[in-house]
Length: 225
Ligand code: HCB
Image 1: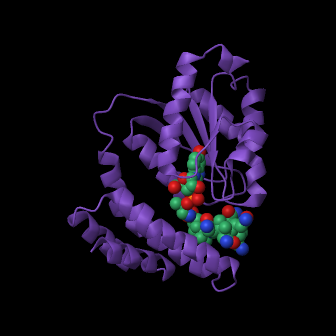
Image 2: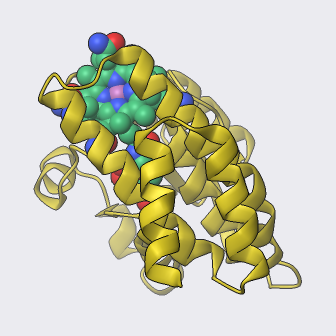
């Protein structure tokens, strides 16, 4: 049953059909399919297909918006289930999360925030189109351990570097780890801009955030070098 359900989920995103996406999410939860499997094996592949069709000129902006709407409809049901996983866990660390300036893509960032919360992190989501200065100010205000920066456009990736520069300028860099992600982002890019880590998806972001917290605790001196 699962495989057909995942294919139907993918289709609902490509077709930009929020009602069907939501209906399938409900059915999946009732059938005991894990919300994370539904997202990773059903809806996210749909988003990738949409991106490919857009790149080939087979889809246009309104289609992509309809697909995002369908994704949001599914997430409205799956998100609370993912969050339930996080109840009664010890607090793992404080994360300030956002999408870089000039970029309004938010679905992946929201997913990262949900999974981090579900695994015990306190997450402050700054939203989209966030400047480096705002990231730094909020990291200071919330006493963030980690700043997570998302970028989905090749043109806004460079603003991830601006976030690191703003943290440096505010004197926060020794205390705050930076993790970056987003479709065009690579480990190599993360290294190039001096980020502390790169995560290819939301679950990897959780694993990375945990390891960054350990590095903070275990190597406080090296961290400042
Ligand atoms: Co958008 N768009 N888009 N888009 N869009 C992309 C990103 C393209 C790749 C499509 C393509 O051409 N193939 C492309 C970018 C090309 C490029 O720069 N190389 C593109 C373009 C060009 C544009 C516009 C410029 C189109 C236009 O106006 N002509 C415009 C830009 C507007 C702007 O930002 N200023 C635009 C607009 C839109 C919307 C509004 C229609 C919509 C976004 C709606 C929203 O978010 N509310 C949209 C969408 C939906 C997409 C695609 C189809 C899906 C993105 C998505 O949600 N993926 C995308 C195609 C693609 O990415 N393949 C396309 C699903 C999530 C779950 O994956 O990669 O975002 P994710 O996040 C992962 C992962 O990267 C990681 O974990 C997440 C969860 O697993 N991660 C992190 C993400 N952030 C992290 C941070 C961390 O610290 C750690 C891990």
